[in-house]
Image 1: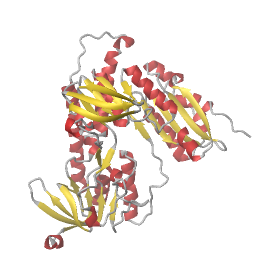
Image 2: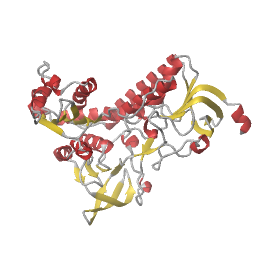
Image 3: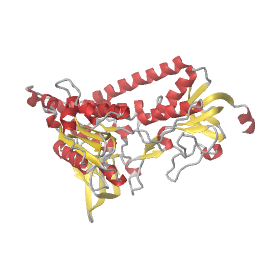
Image 4: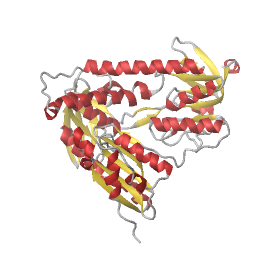
Length: 469
């Protein structure tokens, strides 16, 4: 092994994992003339274009189209013999993924970065042995090494759960049939997005969550809106429920035993989807041999510059404990890119916007009321229902609300939440205003096109209470 290590192929940069941050770092440095290698075990481009963000939104949009057929009479259109073909839904998603993979391969070719398919494992500091698909191996070493191995779906330690072969988001996005009754364990982003989609395709759906309310870290009005959404869609909820055991096989028949509010209950379904969180992909890749430390939760220890405990070794994205969003991983790329050339850049203090792609969407940037109260931040609040935004009436999409938090001593925007049609795009406009340091009055007094969703800023910010003197 020592001889193999001494003969390792040298690179300026070796990236383990081809996810969002790592691939952009590789392409950028390769275009600058650096000798760059990216090691990828399976998914070219990482999880986002293959099995997560983009594929799930593709399926969610197909479900949105299905919902329009269900509501067709509302728009004056008669529907006859409407049928969901899940194979076609899946194939549309697959076609998109194929196109994204081709795009990634072209980017590797155009940048000059080398992509190596195989499983990488550290065998010494900054040195990895890559096991290739044909069983061969290659030894590589980087002047700098970036670890971007991501996370995978967590499978809770519940009796019988693993034996039931439950779906994760990966398998759920590959279904070629509509589940008769889908049990969804976990009411977070993945759970709610797929629960609504499968319900719209025709499944009976039950969401089971251990917390007393959905989105329990968000404000109470957000939880109420999401729970009303589930009611409107015909999704059953089992909240404050701890699953104690699972019997049967997902895809055939499954039975969940749970304790809810002190009482034992049984839920039966045909399919089980587990969406209870993420676990970092940091085990069995030789991090101890690389001198890379882990946190108590298994994430890679990094400082604000994303440097690990090992010299010249960096971590990026989910596995580094960064907020689990593709856009955050992309910002991680910018942090490492700048630090590699001596321009200090840190992860602290950055905005972390998010959007849950239910229909309607839930989006937030900056502080929620819950967070502001916990931090002792004084604020003024403005809130309007989405029905007050006239564009929603033309779309027949009037559910939800917009809410803004404003500083009590200035006109600075502290946070914004939207639950409604186009919430992600609406939130982005407020975020840009926050980045620019604009007072809320700039949005209130803007001349905005009628009828558009952003026009809602005028009634929203016109309702901000005055500063108390």
